[in-house]
Length: 165
Ligand SMILES: Cc1cc2nc3c(=O)[nH]c(=O)nc-3n(C[C@H](O)[C@H](O)[C@H](O)COP(=O)(O)O)c2cc1C
Image (cartoon, rainbow, N blue to C red; front, side, top):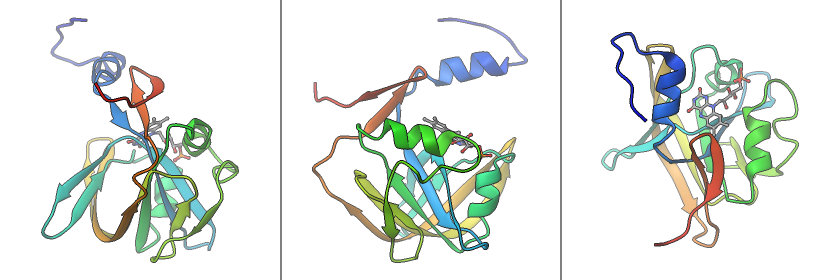
């Protein structure tokens, strides 16, 4: 793939950046209406060990993030290779986001999905505008990984799983 342009075409931007493989997470919270909110997020990364900070980038137009943001805390659920249906539900609009996975409250109260590879329970540290997205920093309060499940991987617009070379 190659392309040169000073005004970067957004479809081209997506296609080229889609060559960077990511895991897939579901960021969840209990909104101020008392109902669970969640969205699929690939733009998740660790940021700092001391203090323990992570980051993700939700779109500014996301209705789910608008609800997540009403909470003090959120949980990052790292999806397993067999949770593509959970991912699709979390990436869809409207109701049914929690139809594909049972959940229990994480220590903060945010939904911790069953069957995930790991979960990271956080408080909001900051929310900064970054173009058409926000850059969200979360301060990690508790976290856990089972060490038994393989992650779901997203690459070039498709789903796969991880294998060692
Ligand atoms: C694999 C995958 C990764 C995604 N990563 C992000 C992301 O990092 N940021 C984002 O804003 N949306 C991301 N999305 C899209 C949102 O999950 C989706 O647009 C949103 O939840 C639905 O819109 P709503 O929030 O208005 O309900 C991703 C979707 C998929 C399938």
